[in-house]
Amino acid sequence: MKVPETRRLSDAAERFGVKPYPDLAYTPEIAEATAPIYEKVRHVIPALEWPVHAPYVFHINRLKAERGAILLVHNYQTPEIFYGVADIVGDSLQLAQEAAKSEAEIIVQCGVHFMAETSKILCPEKTVLIPDSRAGCSLAASITGEDVRLLREAHPGVPIVAYVNTSADVKAEVDICCTSSNAVEVVESLGAKEVILLPDRYLASWVASQTDVKIITWHGACEVHERFTGEELRAYREADPSIRIIAHPECPPDVLAEADYTGSTAKMIKWVHDEQPKKVLMVTECSMADNVAGEAPDVEFVRPCNLCPHMKRIQLPKILDSLVFMTEEVVIDPMIAERARRSVERMVNLRS
Picture 1: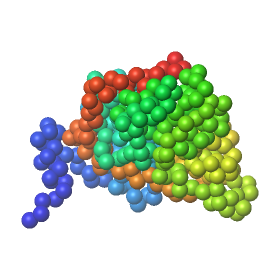
Picture 2: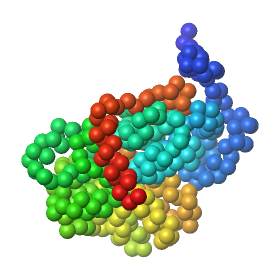
Picture 3: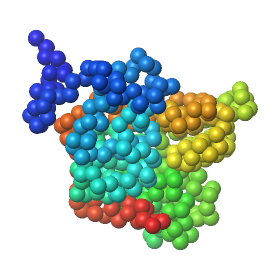
């Protein structure tokens, strides 16, 4: 006879000192407790789906309080995570900064693996968990520490900036990190005539258009953003000339040429709040539009839905399991972590 999944989880939970595994029934208590959260997401989550999400939301929030944990949630996570269980939301830079400031002993990173590594780099004494360690990144996978060492040999004396979308091994080999929010500022802070900026070739191209510093690029790209095309955006504008288009700098140049505004996820969000356009197309990962819509009810969002398959590995059941079983813990070689920390802290402290 097959043992029910909930029973297997409950038995396993007992071995980890958590008993029983949370009952995931949608009870009146859970319905009442999660009703304020559902009000924030009802425009993007059908009422029929909420009874599936609500028990996870309820028990994750209860268990993280018991564990003394904090959940860092990236802007690309789905609304039930973004609004349901997050303590801190934001882009890569914001999450890195909050990880460094947090007093919580346990950090659950609801993003991709390089973000969890960055939190561990900044908080070596804390336990950092990621609900699914397979949540990777095409940019992080495009370059290794050995590649950086070869670049340094090929361009002696040229400072190297690594986008945070890189592994700890890469961060350990560069001079400073950056995000899409501060890439131009970081590049210009080095006071050099030329700078290597890796691994995203499109971000590097955009930065080169914003500064007099010569930018040497790598060949990486985000598999989500590079799927957008300028032709696609022109079709949207032809269908409705009043539409405003805002794009992430990881997009190809022909896309950015069609955009009314280019900026990081945090800057795109601020632009929508400040400008309050009647209709906007956000050229970035699809879930972010759902999340921004929750705080901009008067704005109509057009969603060209390119999803990040890595971000979508982070789901409520995995977050709950992460807190129940204290998995999957992020571990970095101390020697690599120490060298990577200098690069990340130099970025974080740039404006302090």
